Length: 454
Image 1 (cartoon, helix red, strand yellow):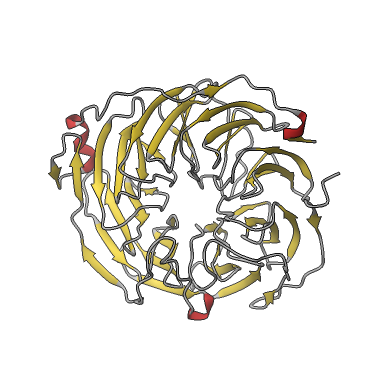
Image 2 (cartoon, rainbow, N blue to C red):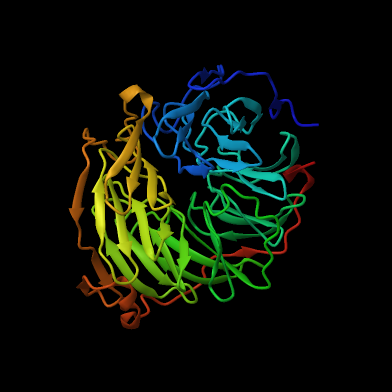
């Protein structure tokens, strides 16, 4: 049986269309992101619904074509976690310390499971073979929970967990604030290996096969259960807050390569055309050779990039702390950006050539990729902004749409700035630095009984 501090609640809650569902939570004392209007959560599309969390403590479901509210659910704190929808259930975490399971049709609470007390629960749950895998924020535990909200196992790390996991080869891969990257057995939570990164981080990993083809990324399976992904050889990629990007062998945690950026690199990477794409707080987006980490190109923006990159029709889309949403072709094509009134930290979601994304200007947007027009926008927080100036950047008080032709500033590996197609920079790349491995990989490792909850 679970400890008394970690439990599941199942109750009858009514969530009628456009009616709010309220849960009292007297344990919430503080939060990392201030409560108010604003969206850090990356959205998921399920049938005709766009579902996302907001800093006003709510989970929203809106009509994808009109932006009309279908239902909303009130938690006890900020919801920066991104939802996962499997078998008509929405799984999402809140800063109130709970993992919630909601009925996707009407927002009714199915159950909630206590992960911890309070903290930064930015990590998003993922479901594989009917099991929900999720980091426990500042509880420092990683959890496996069944679809009925019953604890299967939990494993204690040495720090907060805000990384969303990748589940490949029956292994759960994630990063902890104890400066280690972990591989746990998906069956029982036992530690298979851990790699010392030298820095904390909440970067959600991406995984490729031996041909450097992407098989897992941050929100690839946010509306589907991938069941079993098995690789004979695979590589896991992630960033850290000590300015590194790492590539590790998924079998034993051996470091294949590392790359040093100019600042925090805590967002989630993508893999395309043999390159690893990742943003950084040094205001650059990097393209690194997936096989050896060599710099292919880097592109300068006007703000920190913490938004996981979305790839659609050979174009990358991402948000930025300069309040813009960027679109940059990987081949021939026109680059553009569109301005919101606040920091954009979520990952874009693209469905039928419509881009869906939230901003800290209180609005959630639907933008046509064909016309660059805002189709609709939905306001959170009753128009009262979540002021994240002390955490990320001051929110600019403007919600007017501003579309501009934009020429990306791309720097090749030799330091030369140019504006030609990013894909053509590869032939000019040079090795940015000598790779070394100062860090330790612990493998194999046998967990103590106190570390594993059964």
